[in-house]
Length: 308
Image (cartoon, rainbow, N blue to C red):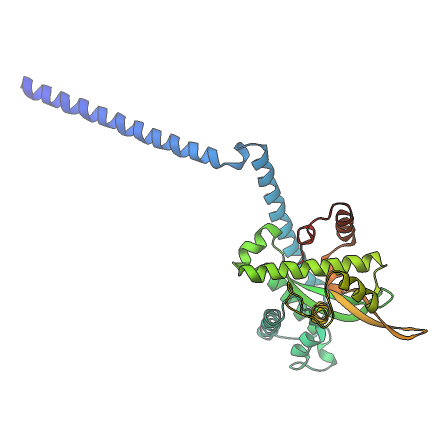
């Protein structure tokens, strides 16, 4: 009986010690997990990481606010006709597919509003459908923003005097903060990415020259300046791989530049002005700042202003 009592006591003691070891191990693991959480916590990692976390929070709030603003555009459209929900969804889907297709074909080239409107009016003609195209476009804008994080931005062409014309076009822009756009877009071949940067740098130089000339420059004067940079009309450039004429034509098609005719004592003169795409994407203050930096320190063009 005494031996049995000792054996039972020893078993009970071993069980108690085992339980304590288990609790100690669990407590140690929990402590380690807690330490890991504390290490990666932005708000406990120092002022720089805290500021970065706050910056990301502001970016997220701005992103969501832009989406809500775009989705609210359809509330301002007046349409008194009757279209079923199924028909409306079909029209919106058709417009979105068309815009995505055109964007894939011709990146950075705005899509004329008339081309988009034709998708609606072809199926629903007549005055009874007045306002339908505007509503479909507004709904498509909301869907692009809400589902894909894209803005189907309306661009307004300016007249020679700088006034808004009736010509409208649309282009897709990412609503994501710049820091995330390249990661989402996926990897590109190095040569392709570098060529895009070089071409946009040339565009920025041209826009700066036009700005310094009072927001317009004659074609002859523009070619004179481009010649000083080694860019000739009919000669392929070693870096850009295209002739100067081809590059200017592409910038005009993308509506970064617009080419307008003006009468003079010597006949018709062609002028280059900033296009609606450039006016929407690059504000005058940023352009003036880029000009100042270039004149003072000769900054790298591709690093001063980011052009989509």
